Image 1 (tube, rainbow over the protein chains, first blue to last red):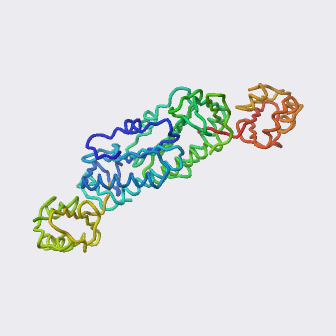
Image 2 (tube, rainbow over the protein chains, first blue to last red):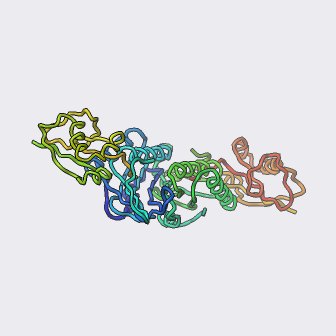
Image 3 (cartoon, chains in turn yellow, red, orange, blue):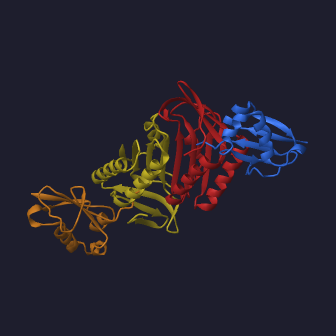
Length: 136
Length: 136
Length: 81
Length: 81
């Protein structure tokens, strides 16, 4: 399951939708809007996506995670629009029988998302706004 | 924060208690009771702890995670008593500015917990029960 | 007989265009479309070395061929997550 | 003048004891306390090579000295998480 959403991400609902009694481990990653970046106070953060391609790439990323790691399932939600510090920008949930594969898959998913999924953030400071190019 | 609890672990509450606008990443690990183990159907799982020592070791483990990794905070809850398949046996939440440290700290915490914290599980099958010795 | 052209994030700000079209017959590849907009928007030059290209929602190269009905997108390095 | 002795999980089942006491003066180290319970509960022998020792909630060795007021615990390999 992968979605782009404009409302707050409900991480708990995403995690509950993944529940299965065969799972022994669930790993959740939440990206959160920080109130500081590049030495400045961040007042808001805007996420923009090339939506049709981002959905395609998120789907491919989930397929690759399922193929490469011994996991049962993976779900990703990325938020778009204007966010405040403390809000969740992306949530990734992986459920598996054993924990090592779940950790590996979540890490693969967020690292790959930051490299290849066409989504961009614009940081708003007290004195202006900047599109961020390139991830970390 | 580290606790041993006899009621269901509220992962969402644990995560919300860790919220801080300086965080950019939150990683959550949930151990879940599997309905199968060792080729058998697991009907229930009982967790027993040497409670005073387990709390001491969990505290040391949290201190070590905070010292070794660039994280803001870590919280661990481990459940004791009788659990059913699908229930959460342990939850670990790490919040940090950047994700790599959060992943490393959660993985260190669950790996170390399984090696040194005096907690044991007894698996109940349809035809009996066995104390499990040694982790994975 | 047209190719849909998309600019995202900072590139949309520079061109003032999020979405437009060009005549399919006039452009053989992605690079020729970029050159056409570079002529009108010289500030794009500063992004030339870092930008990513997509044709029909798949990453592409400057020399990737384009044809009628294609969707060509110019993308800054991504920064989601 | 006593030492508190704890058995956990499978060891409590074997000994039928979760918690008991021994006279402090009669035991110099952890191993001597284990030997005392091994005599009464020979099934403990099968666990000798794998078990863990703790004195006052810290991991210890068979040769760790014990004294009045100590809490000595015998622990199977842990399996929490």
